[in-house]
Length: 307
Image (cartoon, rainbow, N blue to C red; front, side, top):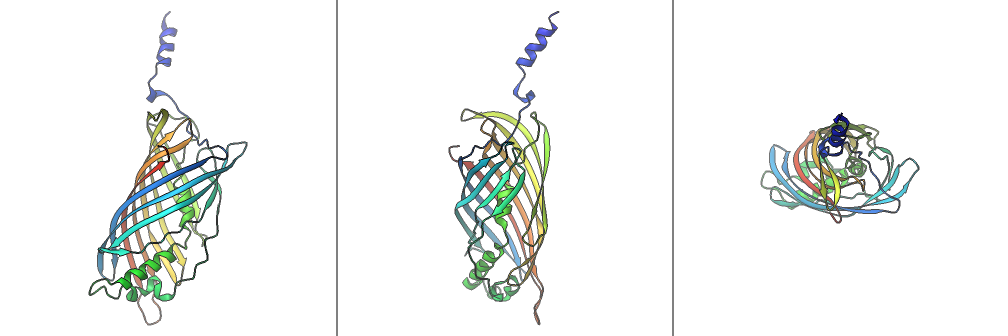
């Protein structure tokens, strides 16, 4: 006769891991969220038969402004990078890096799916001459045999600017949104998410991610879900800069995110991204095809202001 009482007691005192939790973005109109991402990476660049080390450190500060929230909870959010600073070295010498991210506005569902996006037009940029394209690495890296000269680095810096004309800003904004399950989940449960992006040339890029709720904890007086995610991005792109440029490779990443359940937003994320990329350009008349292979591992930490 005491069984109902015992069952009720067990239900009331169920441990946190046995409780289902609903994870959803709950941004409010007019809210402004400031995040800072710090990164540190190292890798190698292979060009013209030589492999040289590359290191980088950087900090990105960006602001998410919530424009509106409709009746079904879809949020219109504009992300603006307010500060971007990256220091890089190649073979022990400074490598110029100038990254530009125009504001990106997305429409996001409560579970993090992007249903629409718009990228602000970037500032007018003068196309790089052929000598600054990948195929002219013979001139950019002309001092390779006897040591890398400053001209090589300034030329490669120009190349990095031109490669950024490919709209990585849209990818940057969309990929960092954590996909959430549509229903309540318990600690130990998994879910998957697939996001498809289109490059300016119309090529499709598919981002596949898998996430797992690994714990619930209290941080700054708030109930937070600890989520571990991994994702994979295959790269197979053909870009038209000063000349045709092919990019092949892949990117794999893993993140651990603290997601404030009642506030409905990520507050802290640590992650590692491993990228393998080969950039190639067909030979010009009387010349040879050129290839540059890059391998890079980057560790990142992203924190919401106040956390």
